[in-house]
Amino acid sequence: MKASLPKNHGRVRCSPNHAAYCGDIDLTGQRKPISHYREMLWKSLTPRSAEGRLQGKNPSPKGEGSIYMAVKEPDGYYGKIKATMWSVWPTYESWTWPGHEGKPIEVEVYSREPKVRLYLNDQLIGEKETSECKAVFTPPYQPGTLRAEVSTPRPTREGQGRGSASLQTAGEATAIRLSVSTPLHNREGKGVGLQADGQDLAFITVELTDADGTVNLTANNELTASVSGSATLIGFGNADIKDCDRYTDSTHKAWKGRALLVVRSTGKKGKATIMVQGTEQREPSELARRWPSRNGTRQSQGKGLKTARISLSFK
Image (cartoon, rainbow, N blue to C red; front, side):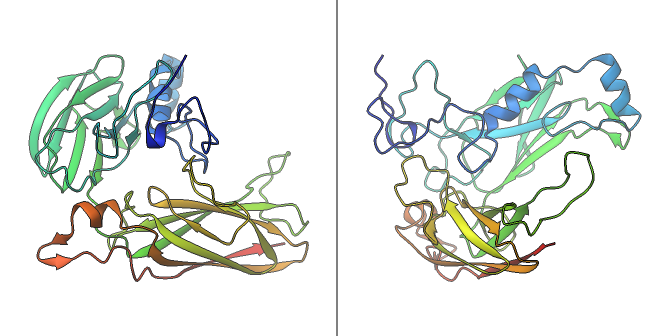
């Protein structure tokens, strides 16, 4: 069966694609919106487990007994999308779509509650009933704050349930944010940190944010990583399945505002310092290309990203 999906969504003739977009997580381990929807749709919520959560036991994960919101990429925004039977429409947790002002855009709200509302810049767009834990709205795109709320949130041990989700339009990326995922427990359940055994890995998420800390999914700056001390860089990449750069290089571009780098213990105890620098984008960001000026000021196209550092301890 032939598939014809331009750009991000693959073809039967796969090169240079090296993954598929129909999965629940991307190449850097980020959960896609479809993952949150499937969890909400299929994960069991029995009366017993619900009662336990109300008593403060086994608190609900994100997406279950709550609300989640994502935005479908407009067809033609990056190219014509031709979905196959097994594919998932490109959908993102983003309200940054420069150049699409005034045009309709689909917003999906996932919730177990019977009704949800959608607001754009504090103006009510509408209220809809959910069907199979989903309601779809089609407002005209306008930069600002998009907020979804459940009409009748359930009570929880903290009071009202997590009855809202919001997305904020991002400005041009000016900063790099690093966050680390490390081993937390051993097989006996005892807390552990990074071990200086020459084997332990730390996965560091790199995010390009605006001045307010909002990840800019249009940013694709080239990044350079350096590692010193008790660790060494073994991998650096992004979630673009058509990116042909080597994962072992110390330089890699961001994709959808994110990248991932992996460091490994050298076997020596002590601290490791990881530094990530941003250079000019390989091509103008979608924000800069589609929205060249804002309030009369030319966009920087991602120049001047602040260097980010993070330290890890290997024991």
